[in-house]
Structure formats: C-alpha cells, structure tokens
Image 1 (cartoon, rainbow, N blue to C red):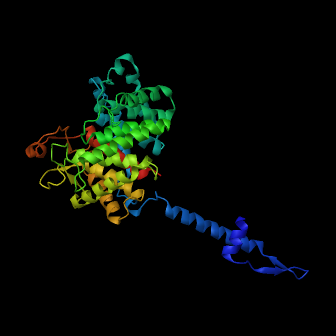
Image 2 (cartoon, rainbow, N blue to C red; image 1 turned 90 degrees about the vertical axis):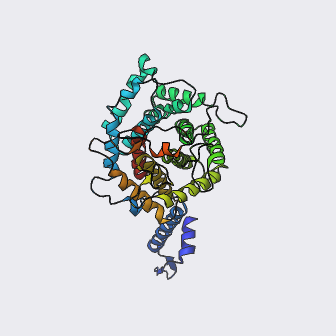
Image 3 (cartoon, rainbow, N blue to C red; image 1 turned 135 degrees about the vertical axis):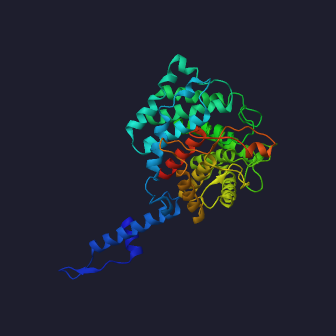
Length: 391
C-alpha cells in the first residue's frame, strides 16, 4: 500500500521496454520517489510538532559562556559545600541546585561529576545525617524530595525512591475540601516548591495522580495570585512584584508544562497564564539582559536569581515552541550572557537577594542585602544550562 501511495502521489515512473514489448515500471525511479515522499512526510510531521531544535540564539556562545562550561563550574561548586547539612534541615534552594546539577551531569555524560553528586547524599543516609531532612509538614522542607527522586530516576536505587515518595505522599495526607495540599499557603514560592515535588514523583513513578496534584495546585495559585499584568504579588496582601518570587512561579510553570499532555484539561489555563507572564517580563528586561529585584522598579538593583529563573522559563518556552516570537529567544540569550558577568572564578554568582519574607514596605524590598554564592542564585543558573542542553 505504501508503494502504491508513492506511485499515486509522485506520478508514474518511467516505463522501460522489455523484450516482449510490454511496459514495465522502473523500480529504481519508483524507489527514489518513495524516498522523497517519505522524507517529505517526516518533514511535515516534525513541522507540526513542538520543536526542540537548537535555535540560532542558543548556539555560537562566546568563549567561556557555553552552557557546558558554566553548568560545570556551578555544579562543581556545589560538591564541597556540605555545611548546610549541619543545620536542622537541608535548604530548599540547595535542594534545587542539587537536583539541577544531577540533571546537568547526566546530560553532559560527566560520570565523575555525577558520582560526586550522588556521593554527596551519603551523609544523609546515616542516622545522624537523616536528622538533616526535616519531616515537619511544611512546603519548604518537603521539597527536599526532588533530590532523592532524581537520584532514583538516574540510579534506579529504591532507597532513594522510598524517601522521595514518602515526602510527596506526606504532602497530600490531609488535603482540604478542594483537594489541595494542607501545605498550601498561597506564597508564590510554592508554585515551584509544591509542584516540583509532585512532578518529580510523577517522573519517577509515572503515576498520574502526582501530575494531577501538581496541575490542581498550580491552577489554584494562578487563580488567586496572578495580576492583570501577568505578574504576581509576593502574597495576596503584599502588592510587590518581587523578582525571585516571580522567578519561582516562572520556573514552576515551565517545568509543569513540559510534562502536561496537550489535551490535559488544565494545560490551556496554565499555558495562558505562562504566556501572559512571559509577555510582561519581556517588557521589563533591561537592555543588558538583566531583571531587577522589584520587576517594575528600575531603580531597584539588578538581581541575578530572578534573571536566571526568567531566562530558564524563556529558554524552555522558545525551544519548545510555546514562545513563537523571536524576541523571546533573543531575550533568553541576553539573560544568559548577562548572568555570566556575575560569576567568579570559583563558580559563585553574585548579586543574589538574600531570603526574603513578605512585607508591605517598599523600602524593605529595595534595601534587601545581596550575597555571593547563595544557592538561590546558583540553582537557576544550572536550570538554564540544563534547558539549553536538553534534546
């Protein structure tokens, strides 16, 4: 039937004469036309699908600016930094940096880096180290589960799955009447913290219940917190467009949209909100590629963690065909190249806003201290490297 279709569409091949004088199809010609038709079919198929082809904006990096080089510097920086394990709980920003570094090591086939990142978990497997993993029912603590779940995805060692899955399941032990986690508090940070844990549990198990939880939670936050301009207040009662808070939202939506099937009933709503946010962010980016501590206050300082998070969301959208205008790929490239200027030789990124609670004081946000090497900034730089390298 395929040969007949090729013959019908491409037209009859030249006939040759046999010694009997009867016509005979030139099979070589027909084979060539069939190959052409097959190639055309492949081209049509890929044109209609989301493209992950590397756009020109994401190629030809200046010396020292490639995602392979920068990602390796930041991921390597993480390995000796074990001090946070001595605190009552591993910090969520460190969790995100660790998770992303594991993905980076796998993508780049860096076995030495991957082995070091896996070994970094060893202290947590001891009775003393296990105390650094808080079992407190709180969104900032539960997100630690993304690390063992990524370790399970890569190693298939079930001890990692058990720990990560326990934290993901615990998050929904006491859902409210809307089906939301009892850890729901409507801080914009949670749009990454909650959804990423459930998303990682889905990636590790392929159990769609986790994906449904992530989508349900995301839509609830979108309905409550997104403003008409596409951006997000730090909280319902705190009318400031804090950069990193919005960055967690952008990162969470981009990650979730990667996994939601095209016909999922909540996908259209999440995509609408994502596109609205990206359009607003595009208007607020500085000419040098940076975004600010308060997105709509150009007098506030240029801040790296939010810049990296917004850059990640735009790289993801541009590469997957959600952001069709060329301006988004160009903005993502500018964001990446701007970030490179803030990274020192040891792989520490500077100008990172320190942890920031909610308040009604504009001066509070404008005067927040800045730090260097803070995991809040380290993590999203690796997100960007991963997004640029993913096939």
